Image (tube, rainbow, N blue to C red; front, top):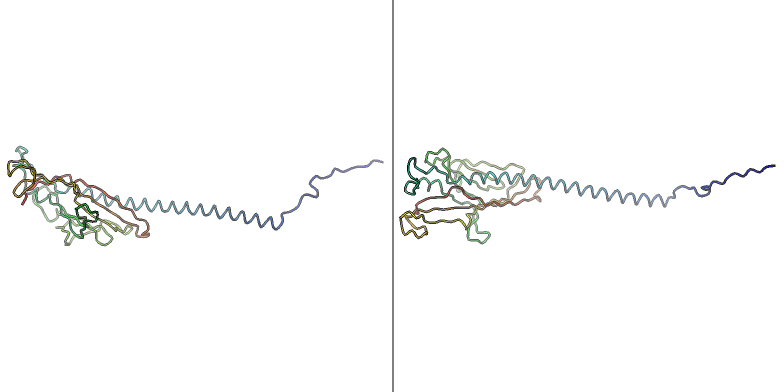
Amino acid sequence: MSIIVKPQNPLRGRARGIGLAELLIGLAVGSLIVAGALTVFAKISFSGLENVRMVRLTEQLRTNLGVIRRDLQRAGYVDAWETGVATEISHLKLAEMGVFGTVSLGGTCADGDGDGANECDCISYSYDRDRDFVQDPDEIFAFRLNGTEIERDTLDATCAGGAGWQAVTDDEVNIEVLTFELDPGSTITELDDGVGNDDGICESGEVCLARRKINVVLEGSLAADSDFTVRLRDDIKVKNDHYYTMP
């Protein structure tokens, strides 16, 4: 008689299901992992949205500042050299250069940074657009801050008011700060033309030359979220020097 011995299953007596306590612990750990992943994802998504908003706001303000820069650089332009004569001071159209070269600050002004020069929320200027040496009403321009908008006037513009003001910003952006300042480093000197004492100091009756730089500060926020604020500053060199006879 033969005896058959069946091999023992090594897992027999060991295989069992997951207990309730183990299941609950596993669910808790899994929930913590998922919650952490969702938190990280939310932060990344929110950060990305913030960056998009900040970039959009910055680009909007840079565009507005670019418009102001390009126009202010033209301030004082007049084709002042008389045809067929030497380029001497005596042949300059000083009267026309004096009229077109004037740059005025106005509106609300204050020396907020203590450098001795006022920062104003409006600037007016002119240039001879049609090159006829006559300052027409539509050749006087101005920029100003009105509420939360930047406005430009192209019709006999003065900082005191008047008609013709049009917004150059859109509804997506609120402008909170717009200031113009004549840089304290701008220079006014007497020209050595044989008139007066030629001491370099600009005095009454003498022909003077002004080289000017305008400091512009622009700050704005998104209309949909005022927490996003961008502040820009630009130092604009007026390309056309101001020649005039000191009153």
